[in-house]
Length: 317
Image 1 (tube, rainbow, N blue to C red):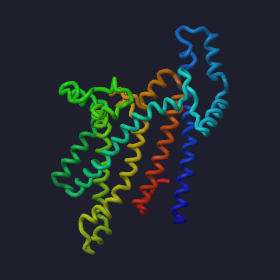
Image 2 (cartoon, one colour):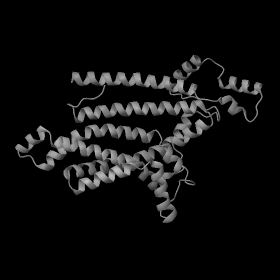
Image 3 (tube, rainbow, N blue to C red):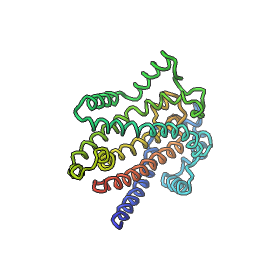
Image 4 (cartoon, rainbow, N blue to C red):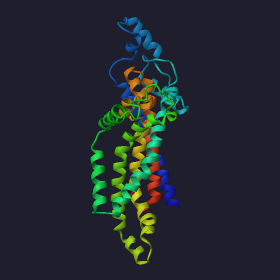
């Protein structure tokens, strides 16, 4: 128990250091962005006095270390700042985009886990036979198709040619759950590559676990094949898959920009693109910090689950 507590304490300390590094890196990178928000906000052909006044109003004339200190203080109090272009709190932009992105991520994960794990276990059970070769070939082929290309193909086939599904979410606003047909194509695109990765990882882990000495020892004791597969082998096979699942959830929550742009979904990715186009630095910084924190938290959770599933496996500290 003491060893587990020590390991958790080390991981939490590492997470805190990573969070601080994310905050500093986000500020440094946004400071290095080309262009000037004051020039963009001042309008077409602005005079120098107006640009100077806008910079003063935005606080951009202050030293960088002062703005960093104010920003970090606000973050500690849950204040992500205020948009330069609209005057709205950055948290409002996060709230607007979080709902559609979370909905897409939740639906994708709910389908990803059973489908990916099921395909991996099925392929491992039939290792080297037709079923295994079919699943391995199909997952490799689907994984090779980029999200944008797959999205265009699905729109062309099921929306434009067959007319079964709407091509985009235009006109549906943020009430996507009330119109399930709008979600089918985006979820299929988001699901395609993660399912392939998860299935191949589970397959490899199951094959390795079934060939391990403890599996042969369990067989000598007369334990049934199904119990060996699902009670002993599968938890060890899921240990590396958990890391992949955490990365996938992080990828989904951080806004899949390509998919949201293709299907015109007003999620976090769309908010980020608009903020970058408008040089709205506080919104970009707020989104980047949220994305970084999500990555840190999800990886911490994945390490804990991996440690619980396979305590003997080495977890990167």
